[in-house]
Image (cartoon, rainbow, N blue to C red; front, side, top):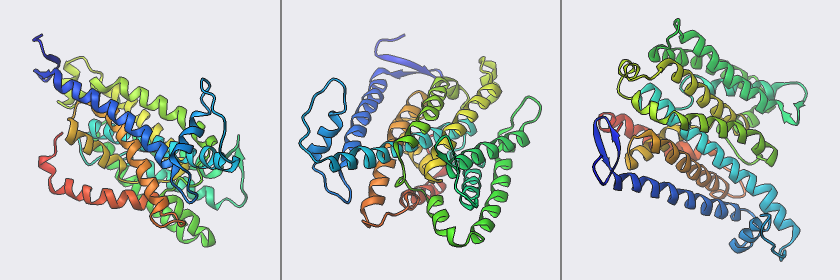
Length: 359
């Protein structure tokens, strides 16, 4: 291989400086993510100095000893209220962004998102059933709403997969059409239950539009394993996902088991999407705008697109949550409103510039 070149793609050598630029971007985004997390944890209805927030967080590290110079209430606000919200926002943003990038790669469609095959509608229906239960109940400390939302997302996706599968193959077009049809059916059921929910309508609508205000450490620890496992699986298949951008037949000729990879990536993407939305609601547009922003800046190579989407998605969601908490404080704006304001114009831009999008 010629000096100064690192990777080979579609017969062309990729300059090593381009590869280094992407690595530097990942490092820069990781540092920026940590900084934004600390800033987002600092800002709220109760003002806490940035230095104090930084010291409180560092004081919990095992290899550092910092003498507390702040009230116990301040530590409670930072560690038990704001930090879980910020971390949950980062997890959800990362999960939806990489799931969106994966769906767009699998379907070779730049307008695909994590909710394309019914996960959002299934989660919404499950959550509403949890809201409408006559009595509150929980399993191992988890309430009915996130449990039913998670189950709804998984079941809806499984139904779509079962309807679309033909023998040992999974036609992408059939999968999308089945997802659209089931989503329409579930949406009509959600609408009927919503108008029949009485005094519970406000809580249901607020959940459907998304919020991190009730996120706790217990929620973070429940979502984290699903997101880590799902993201890990997706990252392992970044190179085959690149090959599948050519054509399914060509990918098979190059030794890629297309149907097996489809199943694995669909399962992993659905898993992290369901885990993300089960506690915070169906937050839209993140899975569309973040992968596209990354693709337009750093290219479509999934070996870099996926990790860069993770970092960018986490940053975007934390900033969106910060805006939702502060723009109209003390009233919190549903996070879905913020992401829609950012995402809808970008989505319209994609529709307008469809043929010029880098993909």
